[in-house]
Amino acid sequence: MSLNRLFRLISSALLMLFLALAVSLVWIQWGLYQRGTYSVPALQNFRLGLIAMEKVSSERGPSNAYMGARAHERHGFYQNLQAARVASDAALTNLLLAMEKDPRLEGAATVGNIQTVQQALSASRLAVDRLGAQAEDDRNQMYVLSAVKSTIDMMPLLVRVVAELASVADQADPELRDGLAAVRATASLREYADQAGSAFIAPLIAHRMLDPEEVVEIGRMYGRIELLRSLLSAQLRTYSSEPAFKRGLDELDRQYFDNGFQFLDYLLQVGLKSGEYGLTPAELTQRYGPRLQSILDLRDLVLDDMLVQAELRNLRARNFLIAVILLTVIACLFFQLLMVLIRRRVVQPLVNATELVVGLAEGRLDREIPATPYNDEIGGMLGALTVLKERILERNSLAREREALITQLQASSNTDFLTGVLNRRAFFSHGQQQMAVAQRYGRDLSVVLFDIDHFKRINDSHGHLAGDAVLRGAAQTALQLLRKVDVLARYGGEEFIILLPESDLQQAVQVAQKLRLALRQQSFEIDGGERVGISASFGVAALADGRTLEQLVKLADNALYLAKQTGRDRVEASS
Image (cartoon, rainbow, N blue to C red; front, side, top):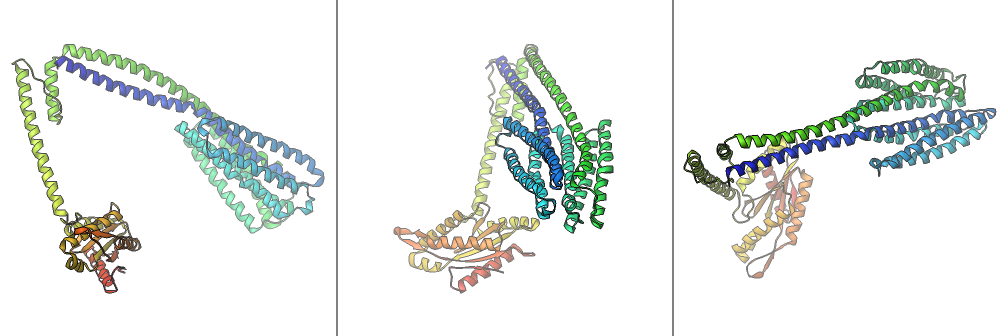
């Protein structure tokens, strides 16, 4: 092969590598752009989920007012309740339709959760209608509490739906993460604020004091509201320092925490002292409900900003993708021009010879050193490189032969010649390593020592060759039952020892029982086609604080001795 052709091949290979890297870069950027284009639809779905959660939660106020209404007030309150129900149904339907059209949400559990909420909402509405239609004195407080609780119990499903939609938006654009967390915090704050108000409905209807369980529940919601207030403030500082968000937080503090929350605190004090609240559930809804609007205003402020930022990032991603494509094309053209200049202006034999020297130095011995018809400096250097390559190959061949011989000798020194398993010395070498690991990390480790029963009788009756066959068969049976991490070795004569990492005493006993039964059910063929059945006795010991491997083996040996003394063909464990 000519030097020029070799250089052209190298240039082509480098160009292909460069193209592969360039295409990979464009592909990665294209994937980021494609994923980013989904961020706006994902945010819109997220907003629909929040609206559905808000509308279902907002239905709780008219429901409470209707359940506490007097006979002459029912009609007006029921009309308000119906309007709230229509809004809730529309929000859930819009969310469900949007999710069914979104291929990324196909097969997700969120659709089923929405349908479950719709079913639970229908059942809750029936309970509210029954209570509202009853005379004021006939309304059972337990039923009122149950109806209020039913509107709260369905909210975790909507929270999971919103969390799933937030996760999809986060995957589309990770930079939305802080904003998504802030919006979810506002949604949770809105829900707990509404639940805190609903906690007073049953006491208001009954004109009674708060019971201890209600006081504890209201205190728990107060704690969550205060925690969400701090969390929301911190998340918005992380998300953006623009004045609009600070104004939104200030308005939230003024409208809700300085007015609405204080109003609830007043009701709490009345509920603790007298139970004479001086207002109806409808009046509670009218005074407290509008204070929650500041929470929704802050939520919408963050959502609108997130949509604007997502669209800007999508635009930047598109422009960056175009720039990457243009730069890739320009770089490819420049690379080809550079290769042409190098081929024309650099001395090809010298370049080729240099590459060969570097290749030999780095151990790339598979490349052929081309012969040259010219008796010049390059030809002399190529001849010297050929001799050098042959010397390196010879040295490598000798090194491989030496390594193979060392490996063979190591295997022979560690293996029992008869059974093919580890010998006693190799077992203790492996065992000390496993013992150190178990003691360092506090893991379980056990030792099983077993002995073939009446082995001398087999030798005396059938000969030593039969005994050897039985030993090999017993070793193979044990290997088939053990895990790869377990260590089996011939301990001496007809005794075998097993090391069981990650196994406590009970697990080791189970392993020993399985092996005992397997050996009991086996029969081993000896010379002449005759088969011999055997049994074995087992001693088991497990690692405890302060025990060495030798002590562990000694305990297993004592247990084995006990098994033989008490009848053989059994497993005994050392305490």
